[in-house]
Length: 401
Image 1 (tube, one colour):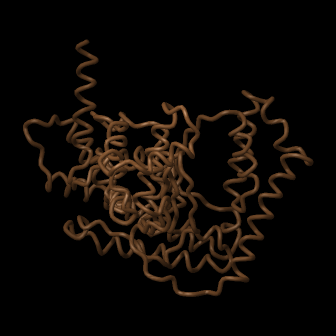
Image 2 (cartoon, helix red, strand yellow):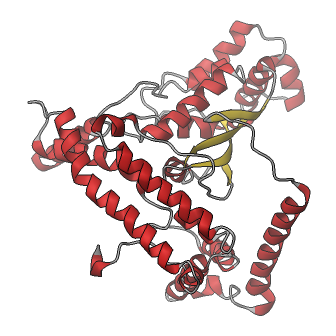
Image 3 (cartoon, helix red, strand yellow):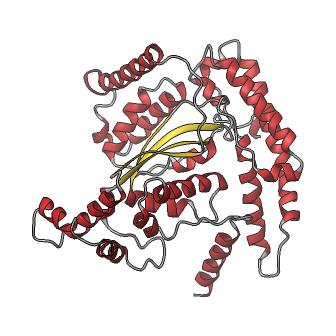
């Protein structure tokens, strides 16, 4: 709590209005709860999973701290400030700046201004158009106007209704719809680079393959994958999936970082309910968890009429957000195998495990699901323990070497 202030964002429009005191009081109360629960949960975790003789004190300390913080991260509100590192090309930074400057949030516009100032000390030639009236300013205005028009159309054309109940993950669309067609398209894409014929002719020949022949082509293309970094090539980009997810905001933030997919999300709200780790009930702290999240919902509803965008800052990570992810099978393999590893957070592990189930069971793309052989469906308790042990082994080897 540096200088007596918790590290959360204070939007200038909110702080200049009648809700400023309620905003600060609620945020402080939520952070007070979080700060009080961290040492309690750390003690509970270490009592629940005592150190064994094969685990060093350093590894155990890091793994148990990570577990306690993972259990409590749902209390952190979206207003929590954090550090973000970026590496990008000049063109990518230009596009980012144009979008930041078009945002309805003062925070985004402020970050964009500071970023532009800093980047101009390094790559000024790439950023000459950003704040020109006839170029970047007009472009940002275009982005802002289309976003506003879309919201206006939603308000005019979509009546307010109660959303139908939804599970954690739904496979809302995929291609090819027919499992046999998916295998034909995959085999065609696999063989194209080594077959001296047009794609249409090749596809017609592949249609005459037997089930075993198609399976052999796909399995040989995938090969013996010793680890998740051994991945097949671009033929797996031929099939794709679109998932509709209603999961906690903390898990969304982790999955949102993946680059090779299309992802869209709805505004944060407290109206979808929230996730509660079962360990909190076992530890006897669930009542304070629920109280803090109720405060989050109360502040959200208070801000919503006057500040519909800024109200999202009040939403804690445990609350569910609805989003869609569309990606091809190659990108899905990378994402699902990476995010299902035992050291991952249980919330997003559950999302990607269910995505894998849908590829196999709903789409019927059995050979694609089988190729994702390093998706981990197991449960983990002290999730970071093995990764901390591996890191220690690497440090030891480097020192001895």
